[in-house]
Length: 115
Image 1 (spheres, rainbow, N blue to C red):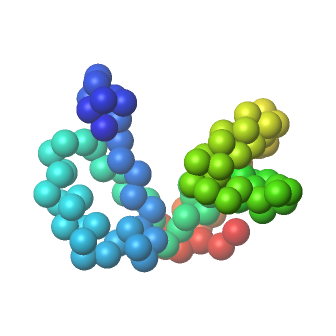
Image 2: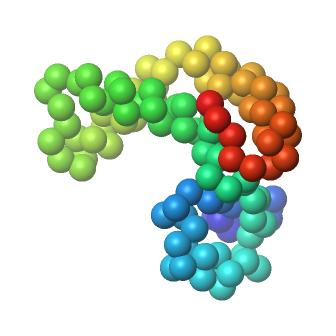
Image 3: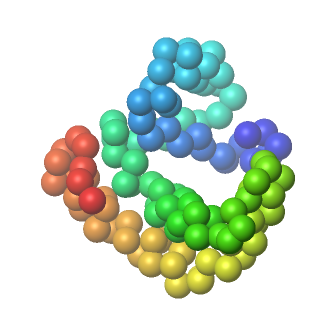
């Protein structure tokens, strides 16, 4: 975090999915809490994170590759290529969806939301 946000303004995003809320992860976050600001997401509401949509688009593109990537390096190259091919409108649509996502979160008073 200190390398990417040397200005101290970076925030760690915790979406509280099951693997991210494990005892090990929770302990690590507590031990390093002074190293960064921690932005708490509602529990089990990954749909509040637009990265999920972008990840799904990249996953779909990789799954449709022929031939599929065979090594971790192949996968890395394919992911970088597919990232560059994502239409800017896809990213913009994800950003523009945030007011609807936040409204849904407010309707459930911070609880889990549905897509």
